[in-house]
Figure 1 (spheres, rainbow, N blue to C red):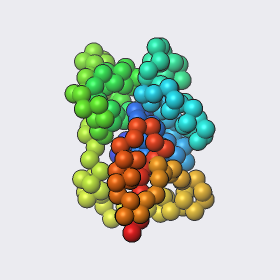
Figure 2: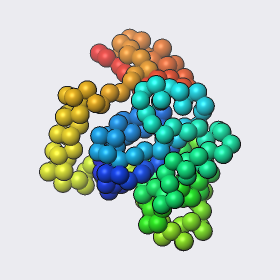
Figure 3: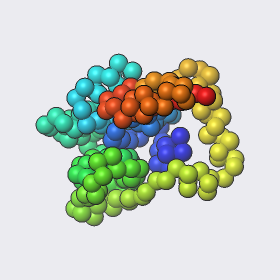
Figure 4: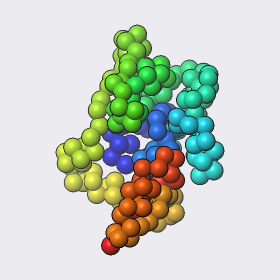
Amino acid sequence: ISLLEFCALKPGDWVVQTAANGAVGKIFASLAKARGIHTLNLVRRDEAVAELQAMGMDNVLSTADAGWQARAQAIIGPQGARAAIDSVGGKQGAALCDLLGNEGLLVVFGTATGAPLELSSGAMIMKHLTIKGFWGSKVSAEMPGADKARLMGELIGLAAKGELSLSTGGIFDLAEIGPAVQAALTPGRAGKILLRP
């Protein structure tokens, strides 16, 4: 929720996110929807599209499909997105710059590919784009207490109404650490691996 707050989005705004099938992506989409913010949710595997749509996520595209950028632009509209969140790295950065509107914000949250982020100089110059890094613990440490309390209240309210859920890839006892690690390393799992004492 602090990532959503960091983007300074208003109801009706569009935000694009990569790795939408990750735990952060799933919860980010739920939180944005609750605030009336539209998300364009990008994944790198075609199979992940159906999974997210079954969860009720809207506007899911696979970047493995040819022509995904044209479909993305058609969904967002000619004004472009207000913000984009990248946790993949590599060539996706330039594509996200192209999807942003004037004065858009690109937030770099991670680098799943490990590849350096590539950017579009033309889009950055012509659209006056801003690029910021996001480190959750730093943002949280610098956030005023009243804002933390407000965001926590928002989370609790959504959870109480059943509007905030997060799937898991399995729950393991501490004695099952080997299978838990193996499950955590499995690509395409449904969610985070949880340990219980």
